[in-house]
Length: 428
Image (cartoon, rainbow, N blue to C red; front, side, top):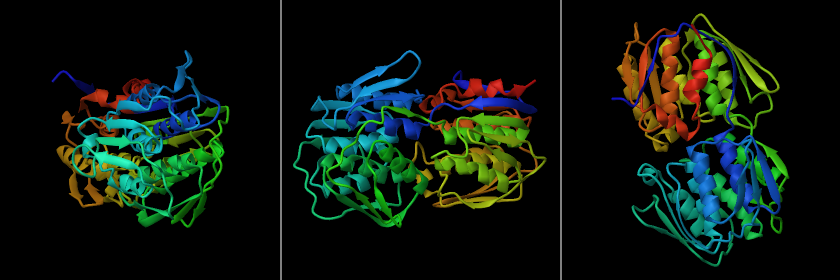
């Protein structure tokens, strides 16, 4: 197999890493800029497969969008009225593009088809569609009910009371609904049925909506009130902070093999995954959180943890690999959302950890990992077209264990230069 990345055994790392922009923040800002009034310059956006799918979709909708030579993006907002009222939009496996566009386009009085890669068509969207149908949106499933692809047709949007939405599968459904609601120009109450997972991602959404002039009232995480007769207004310029999920790999690298400073996130980050640093402290790492960076120092021995990871679902994958090097059995709980991500991450993680010799128990929403006495070398890790699988398992090499990553190009989804950046901190 030629499509592989063979990682040599590494004994130590040190240096600084500057993170690429956050995928979650970039795709939210791209859409908010497109539906706002005025021109927005997005400073430091992430350029990756997922964000390029959002950019391509906006261009297809005839949004005036310019990518500058320095990487910044200038968008002239449409006030929610896309020029192109008929388009077929392909969104790969980008959930952060597919779900918000579904909501925004259902209110846009156009004829749209939204599709993606086969895995996107296996990722549920029913809870979001059910919420939009309460507004009299016209959405048809073109394949299996509850899943993409979708056809959206023009309809007369009506609000007849609170919009109810389930929050226990993916927080992206609520994010998508909240971001689209100001387009109705009416006060809307969104009511959560059952539990709401990944709350920090909702905080990112509310924070960014406020930057564009819409202040949502949050009541006990159960009710969200979107004010009427207000519209999105461009903040002029908006900066994309570094990707906190991507930070987890380099913070973990420091804990495993040396002194690392990760720049681009810090004390005032709006991303929940910055709390990964706290999980590292529980494992025994020495962490220093500064204004715009986080420093980590290698620890002699990591300790196993038992942790509810609802608030850091993406970064929790990095903890699963660190469990290989921790003393005791690590249990990561409340990670049911892993099942509906780029792949079934609980199953994939369990399969690949076992190849390295770990004893793994997987449940519907948890994983339990006991490290082997000796980790197997030269193992080939399958990545399931999932960027985070590739990045997580690359860390094994930092404890002097050669490992091979299959299909390393899957990191293009969020971090195209990941392996080069990893190499830059390796000390020979």
